[in-house]
Length: 440
Image (tube, rainbow, N blue to C red; front, side, top):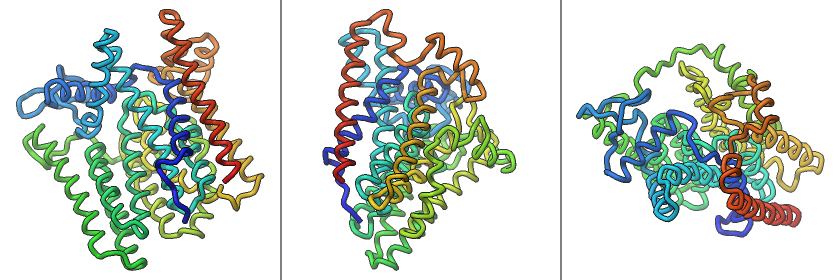
C-alpha cells in the first residue's frame, strides 16, 4: 500500500482546485428550510450561547421552556459558529451583516466539499490505489458527482458524508497506524451529532475492527477504544436532547415513518429521471467496473463499503420521505456516495490501460456537465431533470443563480477580480495535477 501525505503539493492543489470551482458557483444565499434552521441555530449559539430560535417554523419544536428549537441535532450548527463569526468580521469592515454572514456560512459548504474530496482520495489510497488512482477518485466525487451542487446550501448530508468517509478511511489504516483509531472514533462521535442515523454504521465498522484484530494481530484494546468514542457520541446526542426536551431518549425527529415500499424507492434511487443516483452522479457508473476489481484485491474492505452503502440505501428507501423533498437529485444517497466512488481509485491505478482512463475521463466530463446544470440554476425552483424545459429556458435567458450573476450589475469590477483570481488558481491547479498524474 502506497503512502499518502495530507501535506504534499498534490493534496494542496487538489484541495484548492475543487475549492475554487465550488467558490465560483456559490450562490451566497439559502435554498431550503434546513439551511435556514442551521443558520439560525448557529447564529443563536454564536451570539447568545443558546439553541433557541427567534420564532417557530415548519421544522421547529418547542423545548422545555416552550421556545422553538431546531428538530435536528446540534452538530452542524456548532461547527458553523466560526463561519458566523467570520461573517461578522466581514460585516464590520464592509457593512451589511446579513449578506456577509450568509456568504460566510455558505462558504462552509464549499470547504466541506473540498475536504470531502481529500477524504475520498485518502479512502481510495486505503483501498490500495496509487496517487494517480486516488486523484481520479477524488475528482470523480468533487467534479463528477452531485456533491458539487450540494456545495451551495447548508444541508447536513455533505458534512455527514465527510465524517463517515473520514472515519472509514482512518479505520482502514488501523493495521499499519494503530493510533489513528482515535481519529476514526472522533469522526464517528461528530457524525452522530450531525445525523443520528450515523449510529447505524457502528456495528459494521466495529465488526470489521474486531476482524482486523484477529487477522493482523493489532492490539485487543483498539475495538474497545473505538467503541468508547461512539458511546461518547451517543451520550452527547442524549445531552442535546436533554437540553432541548428534558429527556435524553426523546426522538427529536417526530413524524418520521419507515413505511415506504422498497419497490417504489429503490427504482427511484437507481433509475428514475427524478432521483436516480446514477443520473445525478454519472461517475457512479464506474463502480460496475471498479467494485469487482476491489473485491479481488481487498475483499474485506470492499464488503464494508458495500455493506454500509446497502444498509443506508435500504434505510432511506424505507423512509416515507425518501425523495428528500424539494432538493436536487437523491439527497439521501450522499452519505454513501464517497464510499462507492473511492473504489474507482484502485481500478484506475497504474495498471489501468489508456482506454480505461479515457473512458473514465469521458464519464467524468459527463458528470461535470450534469453538475454544471445544477449549479447554474436555482435548485429550489428546478428540483430535477424532469424540469428540463424550464432549466434550459432559464439558462438561455441568463437567469442564473451563482453570486457573480447577481453582483455583476452592482459591483462589476469586484466581480471580475474575484472570478479572475479563482480562475487563475484553478488553472494553476489543473496544470500541477496533470503534471502529477503524468509523472506518477
